[in-house]
Image 1 (cartoon, rainbow, N blue to C red):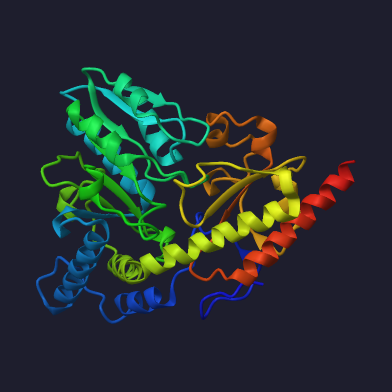
Image 2: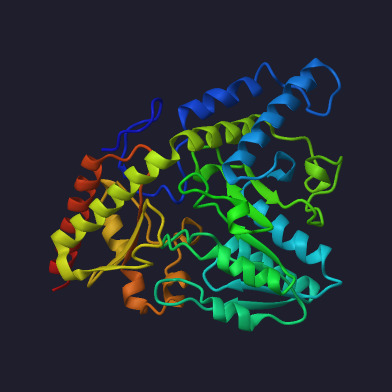
Length: 391
């Protein structure tokens, strides 16, 4: 049984933190007054509006600090997919007079892939999907070769949500800028887990997602480097620099601000703790199942909380169905229920059979060593049982 944060019921051992995180009670506590007593419209000129406006400003500063930006470079959105859409659609349309070519990868989140496809379908953009190697990494030489005179934007995620592989964003951004294009990265899985600095990464646009870092669903942010122009995704009264009109969701913005404060305070120690748990889980599975276990993703350039493994002669879907003691995933939550092998894993050259046996096991703030040991035992027992049934 998992040890949830105060106020949440007990349940299976949670090993699906990359899909979503429980809301930290401290985050909920910070947001609650903005659902009740501080109800004002941030654009109103009276005291009720001032309180809401001040809260948003403080949250904006916190998010900016998390990613090493200036406060006026942060735009609040309705989540990560919303931020990805604003970045890609917004930049492509704003700079379409300079060219109509976008470069991305074959292993991006659906929010990026679908937005790029919409730019092709609706606006005539050409889209290049870069391949990845067996560890899920983009080869900088492949990026270099993909540029044309029409390239205006590159969008490559910071870390993959399924395998945890971390891309060499700084190098890729330097190549992009040498060709005069903009660089966007989706940092939904890295912000709050590992240090994320837009200055060090040299990116122009960066996505943050609240529900991946213990804030509620429905809130996110986009870093927009000063001087970058975007076409708005929501037209209206000029909120969020005119890029996303509509009265702000003050409570959720405050929640994201509090979540980033907690992440800033705890990130170095939590990163070390999660890496130890990750290695413990991987080691325990290898000890129990030996050469049947295969790691998917880069062995070291990987999120500290993520283990994606295939287990020979095992269907991951059947294993999870037979193991009620853990809550985990066979891949991205956005693809859950899809019986096809993970496109991320097949793009890495992993065979369909091995991809179908892949488990995404991700840990977080309330994961304990005892839970990791118990989960490894449950997975190993289930894998052994299914193998015997098939024999």
